[in-house]
Length: 345
Image 1 (tube, rainbow, N blue to C red):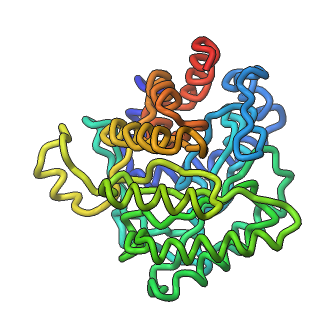
Image 2 (image 1 turned 180 degrees about the vertical axis):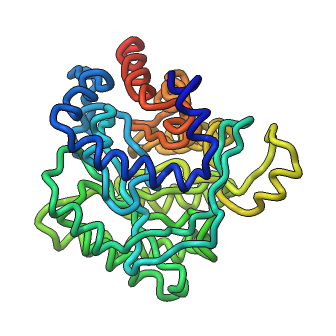
């Protein structure tokens, strides 16, 4: 029903318009008594065999919602009703920012992908914290943190520190985002020196906290082999707790969508099916390079249960979906969890 009726209607509108419609709709829909329980009854798989303990956190199942959808911590509890085991909010920045000029999000339906250049549009970390504090959290929350676009790279550390401190008491784990292609010069922070400074500061601050919160690094699928090896070595030595692999890509190789349309869309990060294989390749490489000694959250091109299984068999401990959820609908998480049980993974 979703792919034959609902999706064609939704896809007649701009992606960002539909996004706001869905977020606002969830806020209203799940206020209706009994709707949350009814939705979970249809879409959530309850089975202790799905439970996974990763970096010290007990996840009810290994399927999460990736960062980018619930930027401002508005609907994380509602997303739990679709069967997700965890939800990552953000990317949040210290100050509110509007992001890049619109239009900035484009579907490439033929490729089952999305190109976006949102630019960390969000209401600021303090607004996200205020929302989390008001709610009785019923789902594991990851906090994806970044820098404001106006912040020069030499001052970026202060932005990560601010977000880290503001969110520390309200999320279960952190993701350092230096790999998004949609914020000017952000990916220059992926060099070893810049990364080392950010990691050292955040792990040092964590050491003074009474409760330990895992910190992960989100990496780009566009890293060169040398950069990937350097990043793995740095993470392994630094005390970070894992990787999120991968972010969106600037590559346009192998797309079915006609070249004129791709050139019309221009810049932005590519997600969905076109980056599936590269994401899995990086997951497998990290797992082999580290002898599976550090957890990986696998994300990128998960549209079917088999796509999820590929990520897990490549070495991911957990997985996240976003673009696949848009293309396949709310039943995707249930299908993935059922396949995981069937395969005994």
